[in-house]
Length: 304
Image (cartoon, rainbow, N blue to C red; front, side, top):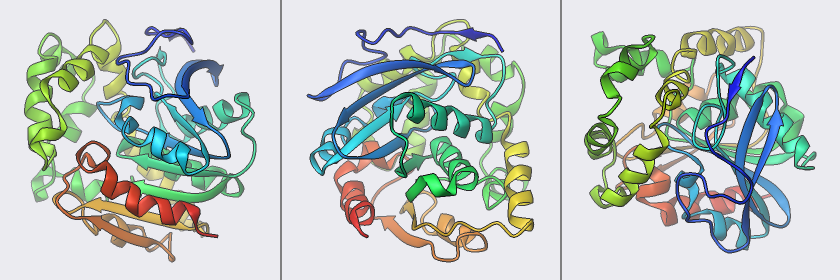
């Protein structure tokens, strides 16, 4: 598998210089790809997995608060995004769960973790919990629909679902459409998907747009979508074989986005799922209302 690293060295900020005090950047080669992360704090590990079209910076408002609660916090850039390598393949969520698993081993974090995933990061977190259940102490999924358990309905425009899934899955076409128009598209996108219009000021959109420029950067993002049908088949096969998640699971939805849909669709395979809805938020809860999200996550992550 070939890799094309985007930027990072451990001492150079990748797409934004908002590292909080006490956090550093690390790069490790794992599972055939260079993976860039930010890491800080001390204590039991919390892993934060971002969504599209973002990078580790999605969690920038929550890194220091979580570290101050007594955790070692790790926020990777997913394969193909931010400072991590764009690879030819390997974007299915089970393989990206292996990315995370090998990354944690490389960082010396070998015990059970508390894992938080938003959007595509939540899909990877779900796969991680399926594949490594003994390695997940707590699982929090933030505003997504899981492949095989609710995503297919959301991605079907014929029944009122969202159009972008099919477009982003199409090989080559979205790269051709968006190259050179990254900022204009993102300005429109975040205005549509976020209920808080102040969550994505122009300077933040500039930073995110910069992470999508380059010969492979757009493709690295869209490849996450191109495996989703297979991701759904993988998840359903596990569930049909009797798979269930027995660790504590929290399903968080934005009031103006998935709401309680995530928890409802997970119940067949997560019978004990807990539910929280963040009032006033759209899809990008970590940017829109980070304090409200932290207020929900902190007691869940801390409970015995």
